[in-house]
Length: 202
Image 1 (tube, rainbow, N blue to C red):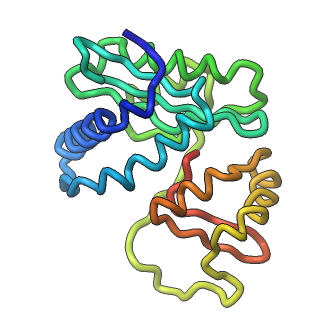
Image 2 (cartoon, rainbow, N blue to C red):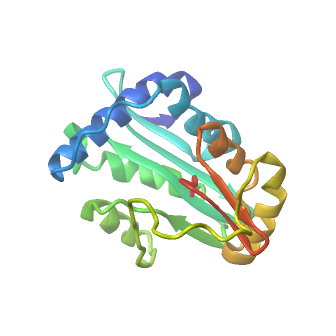
């Protein structure tokens, strides 16, 4: 059954997310990370459910949550914030059904954005939506240089600045999504030339 995702589903979503990402790590030969704090983890999906209920969808089978999707719409730009399917139900079509429900929320949007995992099945599903794959660069480790003097750690008072930067760079602002990320412990870096948040919603 495909149905709207509700705040009451957050505990089940936590289990679904942990089990799915733990399996992903094992399949890809990566270290299985420790489970995060459920209270912190719930902030982001709760925010999406409250701001964009038309983009929040779940798949349920025999009373168990087996898939979930979260999409947001900001100033005419649609973004998929989460698409997750339990390992036992991947490649069965349930993920595509949830994605389709989330993508219905994009009707009339002037832009669409998805940050994809490296899973070829996910990228194939996004390509079927007509989306173009752009390359990205991921780096890890400690930087060998110090941040410029003009870069500082930001806070909620800098959200208006991030909105101006977002509109210039991507055509739509994240707005209070930034506050949700700050609430989960992410860091906002600000300079007079731009801003960046580690781990944006989309």
